[in-house]
Length: 194
Image (cartoon, rainbow, N blue to C red):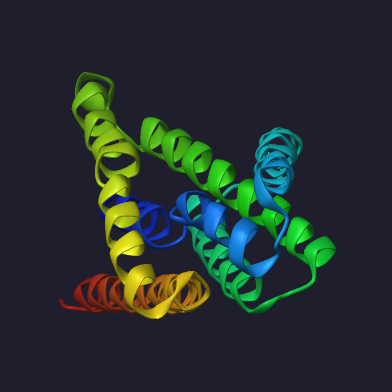
């Protein structure tokens, strides 16, 4: 559960701030003003709806929530990086759809995995940690992104956040897998002791 919460924190802190930086992209990068900002926000919303539907469709085939969350963190990070680097509006809209899908799918899959892994008498406490991680600490990511964007610009801020999210998720997955393999080796070696 700690790994799942940590992955949720990484994507919420590093990728979710793309929403608060969209006005800068609408005004300074794409030069489309307020109506264009509405289009960018709509693309993100379409992605969120599509991601929720896709998660429902794929839920019968997905058995490992942690793998899905790592995948969503990597895809969200790469989509954030690509959105930061692109200057073509139509491609940016497609990337916003992907970002919207990744954010909603990560929150939903984290919530589901935690509820399935938690004993019933502890569920409220664990879900309060999830709410604090996904919704309580994420605004600090927005604050940091705004502060960094003032210094280095919104595209560089999103690019750095995307890279950190993707690399962080892969690092967490590798460490988690290494620990699991060490535990399995320890268990198998203790079985061989007479």
